[in-house]
Image (tube, rainbow, N blue to C red):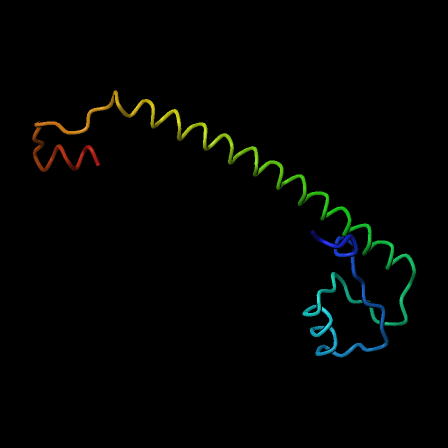
Length: 102
């Protein structure tokens, strides 16, 4: 099971502002990196965006699960109907007819 804290947004508030420090923070799993000094409204905006994005991703996953279920239903219908399709014919097409068909 996933520990509950793994769902929390991680924003690093630090005096380290070098690019290498930010990269290290992101590689460690930070969602955002905010060097000091910072304005509290900036922090609030970052957190709001992270939370909104996670909610959107959660909704998208639900939509993808629905889409996967619909695709499986379509596949099953196609399998059932495949018995009614022509598997092989003795119809021969000229090159021109093949070009039109393609």
